[in-house]
Amino acid sequence: MLRASLIVIALGCAAVSGAEPGPAAPRDDDLVDVAGVIGDAVIDLRYATADNFTGKQLYPVARCKLRRAVAVRLARAAKALRAHDRRLILWDCYRPTSIQQELWKRVPDPRYVADPKVGSKHGRGAAVDVALAAKDGTPVALPTKFDDFSEAAHRDHALAGDAGAEARRLEQAMTGAGWKPLATEWWHFDAPDSAKYALSDEPL
Image (tube, rainbow, N blue to C red):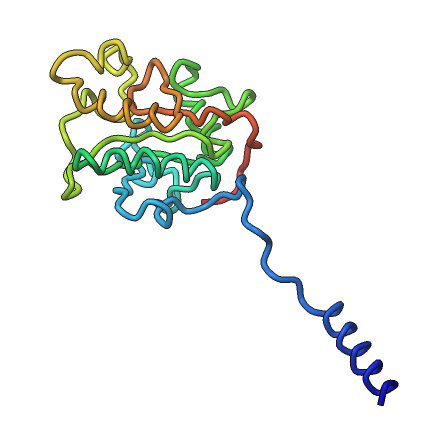
């Protein structure tokens, strides 16, 4: 009986050792779909349409992806905004490096578009271009349109006066969640630890 039991145990161990490995444990640097993290986000990725400064569709799908830990950070800002009956509009998130090269060809100005040789924080899955909507998803009054490459979009102009009220609300929620604002674009924010994530050309 003892011998039979040992054989059964041995066969069981062999079966376990030959089993297919389970799914990998979630990692902070996984690229994840933000729609699954922030359920009320308004997905309006401009590069998935022709409604952007290039006048052409650059993304095959309107999918906002970020590193897992970065998406969680964005969810904190979204939670703070709900208290003011506001929802995040997602204009841009992770951007494959090949798309960054296309943007650089059109606007080779590092104030607005990162040189692909250096790399964009969007390309690391650690930057977002965001705006605000009311509770019903309708965009609120904002200082400028997306990709306004003028001083009107700079924070020292865009956040001033009554016209900058919603942009100030956005900045307060984002910085409260640890995001770093870009001086030349009121809609752009970087994760504080963006440099630790590798550049990627993973498809959307």
